[in-house]
Amino acid sequence: MMQQFEVIVIGGGFGGMYAVHSLRKAGRKVRGIEAGPRLGGVWYWNKYPGARVDLPSVDYSYAFDDAIQQEWDWTEQFAAQPELLRYIDFVDKKLSISSEFDFNTTVTDALWDPGQKNWIITTKTDNKYQAKYCVFATGPISYPKVPRIDGLDDFKGQIIYSSRWPDCDPDFTKSAVGVIGTGSTGIQIIQSLGPIAKELYVFQRTPSFSMPMRNVKLTTSYMKEVKKHYSGIRDAAWNSAVGGTRPQTTRSFYSLTPEQRQQLLEASWEQGGLAMLGAFRDVLTNKSVNDAVADFVRSKIDEVVDNPEVAEALKPRGYPIFARRPCLDTGYYETYNLPNVHLIDCLKDPIRTISDTAVVNDSGRETQLDYLILATGFDALTGAMTHININGSDGRNLKDVWNDGAYSFLGTMVSGFPNLFMTAGPNGPSVLANLIHTNEVDVDWIVGAIQTAERKGMQCVTVKKACEDEWMSRVHDLTLGSLIPQAKTWWTNSNIPGKKEGLTMFIGGFLEYRKALERAAGQDYKNSLLME
Ligand code: NAP
Image (tube, rainbow, N blue to C red):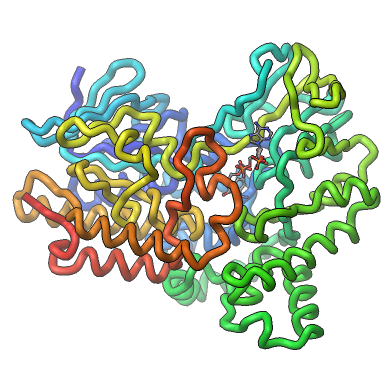
């Protein structure tokens, strides 16, 4: 059966929700499609113990509707996953978004029909949708990475992917639990399960730099003040580098005396959150500054962790601090002082195989486990789209087009793929900025483009190749002066074997990105798009 719409939106996370709401409000006949059973996107799938946002909740929330922000009260500075789902349900109740979605529906194909000038979208159960426009709000960190570990399928205990966490937490209190992965996800799981699992074994390959989150409860009177000042808070976010109110400094490290630097580092550590990232403007461009900040964090690990050998193994080395996604924790390093928590350093002793009952390291060490948790990350930025068969004009397949690295205009369009839009796509600020605000500005831009085309009676919207090339040069040139590409992480696509390595994110900041969107929308989008 073919269902017909003007616009199909794929993905029911923050981006997809806002896209469906905005397109409906603009008068378009729109349908959302979501693989999960409800709205929420990553916040539905990643319901592992300890999952919480690490941007302040007041920032990490929709700005587009004042009634929503005036009525909703955040209870913690960094909201936990259940509160984020409650927020999503609240927004849904106010705006009635879920009624416009088909849930439990996985898209397998999106094919452009050049004759009809529309998209044919096919699902796993062979349902078909036809729509003039297709918006991919599939998220930059949604497609799980399946690690290549010999014997994984032989394990007879329970394997749990952090990003496909079961609805009910297993009882870990009587079990031996292994965790592979020490990125943001692994850290949140480890600090949560350490105090409750009978035995917890952490298989750490690359250690992350982690800083104290210092989460606090938000009182009613605090939220009252916030609500009075929301317009200023949002203004600050729109005009910031990260889409949030985090202070950014213009001060360089060497403009301060050694004592002042140390004081500032200590103050940033005490303040918690990402304060340290904003402490010196040259932390990501000057290697010796970066080394000094990294040394400071390593010294904190020594202060916290009792066993010097464990402390040493937990210290990240060999890549710049903040070049790998910084993590925020609550007692992560302290967890390693618990007698039931065991760190296995897989840089020294790599995982060789997994047997039916144990993880086996190269040394022959066997760790018997009941549960094996895989917090092994994502085929990020592009994976959610390249695992759908997307064919544009001339039958060009998006996966092939991106084989040499994701190429796009502003992370919102790809040349050769007419009437196809993305929110928070590769080469936008993506995960380097507040994803909710990035989704909001992207959706506004996309809806503007669709409305302009409709007003003018146009059939096809494509990005001008020259504009895409110019944007990609800018994205690329900015990376040259940065230390970020020096770390092998999902930010640089290095975590997926065979994926073209390189930083496909715009590191020029959220404000510059917004200005680029504004310019591109100038003169009825004539500045950047071809409408025919
Ligand atoms: P990640 O940062 O990519 O970490 C994956 C971990 O798994 C790494 O430690 C990696 O080690 C390890 N790993 C992967 N394959 C392995 C293998 N075959 N053998 C041994 N170890 C292996 O993924 P993530 O922790 O899920 O985080 C992804 C992103 O999601 C974050 O960076 C963040 O943007 C977002 N996130 C945000 C929050 C939040 O807001 N609080 C929470 C969770 C996640 P190697 O580095 O050595 O490969």
